[in-house]
Length: 123
Image 1 (cartoon, rainbow, N blue to C red):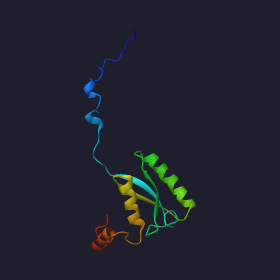
Image 2 (cartoon, rainbow, N blue to C red; image 1 turned 60 degrees about the vertical axis):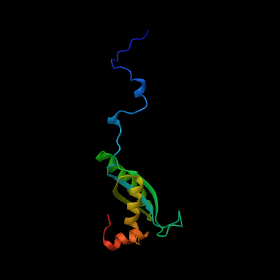
Image 3 (cartoon, rainbow, N blue to C red; image 1 turned 45 degrees about the vertical axis):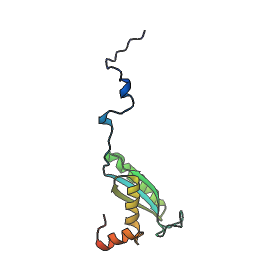
Image 4 (cartoon, rainbow, N blue to C red; image 1 turned 180 degrees about the vertical axis):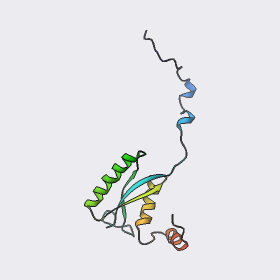
């Protein structure tokens, strides 16, 4: 019979279907995101402003890795003049894409954006 050196007790069967409370994080935190968009409108011609978000990437937590990410994305955007690189703080990738589109777009794309621009409530 094998001998276990681990002295922790196995989990009870009723505890197997739920994660411990310290592992579950339900809040959304703001984090930096790198967004690459195309301003020519060649990917989806249906968009009224002609801006297509091509890539959304969450920035690394380490400053060195974040700098390397930034250099890599800037080098890719340097090769194509129609690509725009934007850094935004957001809670998710979808939120980052929406904020980047608002920053790049010269014209408000929705009525809500138009009202925000008129009232000066832009993020």
